[in-house]
Length: 442
Image 1 (spheres, helix red, strand yellow):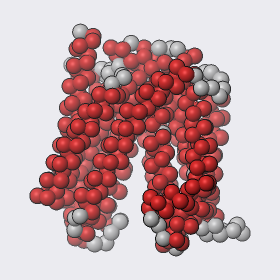
Image 2 (tube, one colour):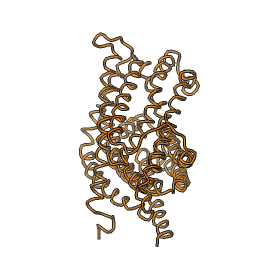
Image 3 (cartoon, one colour):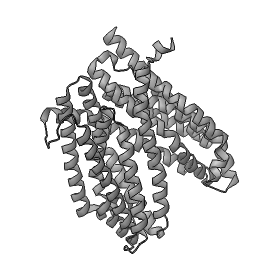
Image 4 (cartoon, helix red, strand yellow):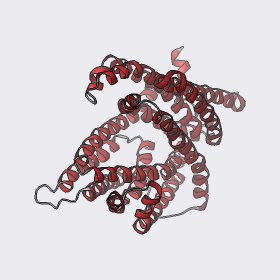
């Protein structure tokens, strides 16, 4: 019964595992190296450290928003791949890659001309910090285009079931980034001390190494040749899908997050510190969530392209796999929450609150993982516009609920409210999948 219910079989489980495990390892190593990199940059002057933080956050925001174009390719390309239409799969890859190159060049030109002015107008930085941020941005801005190209390669390798390549390329990039930062930021081994600019150079060199490796593996496993092309039909299909995906990302991961931050910032400083620690601890918890939702999107798009009624056949198994990973991880984190929190802070009152609130936060994130998988499935089967409208409605209502919950229950109320939000999203997505399947295929 369980096998029938969740579509279980060895081949599907093996396929999900082969794709998800390398992605999880890649994200884990990136977090480790990111923390190491922050430790290196963190020894700069406070103004320089702040400048790097602000400028890198700006780059991350731009890259993430534009990078939804590559998610569009993941869906469109996956559907073509499922149809075994390699020609169209190749065309969609080439068009997305060509657009990414153009966007990368335009972004760097814009940054070189107006980067410092943009930093000043958006963040209102002081003169010294602004100067450092501007210089960092001029170099690190190159990573926008490079990252977009890497996102495309990532989608390509996932579609041809070669996710392990991402472990090689991105781990190599992280190692090189950390090493170059160590040498150039503080001027080791006779190299000049470049400070924040050295950190930017390290990022560019690291991602360039990843790009070179990706090109090498693309040549090794290519099933078509790359050419710079802007096919009108493919461009229109990608852009039509990009708009709702980008708006979804903007609402759920930008506006919603900004509103939550605004709520939390009004709390007591001790609760604010607890919130910061919990966010750090749950980064590890989020790794399988992002990996499996991404894998489910790719496989669902392929299955939908091959046979539309099979577009949801990987969803249930992906959820079961996720829960099998998250429940033991949650128990371990709860059992050792106090010792782990003490690695970050020596304030016992904060450690105590972390121990009390973390179980609620983890429960909310488990529900979040489920809704992410169902959302990815719906987006992969051409229901991205419905997802945008429904999630916007639920997130809007949830902000009111979260605000009221915080008023009465403080920080626990935040995570209770988030749990309600994620549950509402999950139930709606499940109902939509069942209704859509019954309407079309029964």
